Length: 375
Image 1 (cartoon, helix red, strand yellow):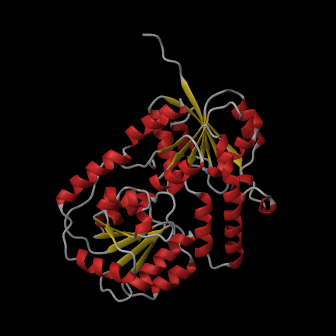
Image 2: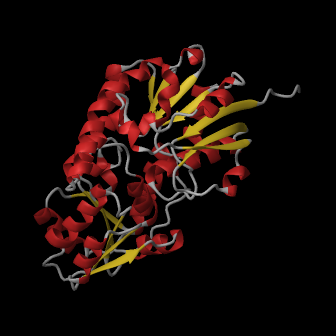
Image 3: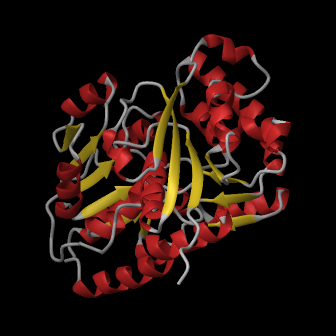
């Protein structure tokens, strides 16, 4: 048999995707890993602004390049969104123009080259991680600090206007069905490919756990708001314990939790510690006040935890409704917590989860779809 030609791909990431410890970079890292394992020579380009260069990326990538993100305030006064303007690199453009390999842009953040005529005939696929203007509008609503609130509202307006740049993309890949429907109303060549993730099999424990768990990046206003809501509105008069775990909890949350007898905080757990917390919990609570993107922590709890209690915004576009217990207000959540703590988690639920998750969220089948689109 003749040798098959090598397939190369430029993958432009909004951040350094290692460690893969928050939503967006989890999708980037495990997508990149799956591409490499399927014979694609990945040329990774990362914008850096706080994370360290990662040797681990070289294990999967043909090449890895880093570009300083310019986070100076001058970008706040530009007409294009700050998240885009601050990721402008001539060095990156030169590298992308040095060959004619297809390009995968991660997030609207990295799409500035779509406005560049030199790329008009190039195959450029955009992975949409969110409907960004909706995401920023919700951040604005959740934010209490005046300057940040203004920034988020201003950015949402710019993002809505800038989004039309996606007309120049060869293809748009949405991360949720809801997002795919939105983009399909406005653009051609839209597909839905779920988030890539580290989970291979369902590892839930049966029986009873001793506590409920909420986890997330606690420095993000959306997650801080959810954690505070659960602590003060749901578990305020419940006898069952709640553990709140996650990255960089703000001082305000630390002080609040110290004052509550049945709520504990686990700050900055390692991946292994978080996995054990999820597996040992009786209920994993995943709530959000933003129906945007796909919440990867929902997948984490479904693959590894017992009962999964959610609100409808957490499920938005995930097609995972039947695997979760739904509650949309504090009274309903309290009721479900009381009911679920009286029930053992059954073995038959593991089989049901495995079948559903394998059908929708299996990396192997989803990478085949992606390779088809970028080829």
